[in-house]
Length: 369
Ligand code: 5AD
Ligand code: SF4
Image 1 (cartoon, rainbow, N blue to C red):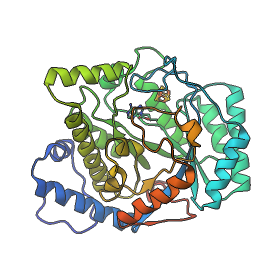
Image 2 (tube, rainbow, N blue to C red):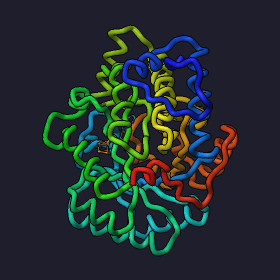
Image 3 (cartoon, rainbow, N blue to C red):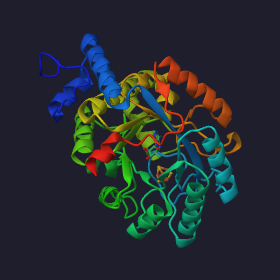
Image 4 (cartoon, rainbow, N blue to C red):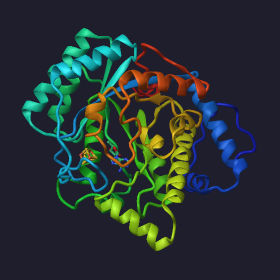
């Protein structure tokens, strides 16, 4: 089914864009099942049945941007803005360390400035000094000097989604101004790689006007750009946003109902996960929260179709509600402890085990360097 009569279990397959596209739209359930089983075998080969945790700290929702799909974009007037103090972040990090999560992911809206940079560097240095945690960042597009300072402070992973590898589609889902340029985003990813970060990127799946051919080219792009980590998930409708309006309009035009479109985006997302695993082998792939926004068992399904990373949310419940990038973000009233036991169970259901206390670096990064 992949242009070959026989595949060894765990074999990585270099599919081209047309082959990827045809597997994304494949209707035969036997072929799709075979794809998932094979992706899981590749995952087993490189990840040895292990899932690694990244404790997610959404430390601020202040953002200077207006991405067309996002629920905390600057123009959203009804969002209560917050920024955690150093002590609040450290408390969450220490908890994650005590739980032997291995590493944390610090995420926020995009904010420039020397003060913010100093704050972040200080927090990172303290975490690295006082805990065994690995530190990943996802704080957007910054000048190269800032990236370097963050690296020197002890951050070693960085996530910056390209959102789509198609610059025209990127332009359609962002304001057309200098703050939101595909080229800048791409340039940042390249800079981060040059600085020696483990670099993760990803795309949203099921965006209005996005085609299967766009998604196939996203997968080729991940491989060509030699990324270490991939985080992708379905686009989730967010009211009162330009992309949300486009999404509704598209449903109306095509006469499709919401649930059908959501189910389609979900299926495409796990197919993308499987195909990324199949074509790239040794990268880290996250089972993202957005999958669970569409299906309660979304993340464990992804763990069986090629994903090996889970990001339990550490942000306390009273803050979580202010970090809603999209409608129906799951687990809003859960505490970190509840998240931990829930995800433990989900990993067990997926037939995997948790790599407690390990950084869980992508094998790919060490091969690349
Ligand atoms: N649906 C799905 N993902 C979203 N993101 C932002 N808004 C949405 C949405 N409505 C994703 C983007 C961004 C990441 C932090 O969250 O891909 O890079
Ligand atoms: Fe800001 Fe990120 Fe939302 Fe864009 S997606 S508006 S950068 S928080």
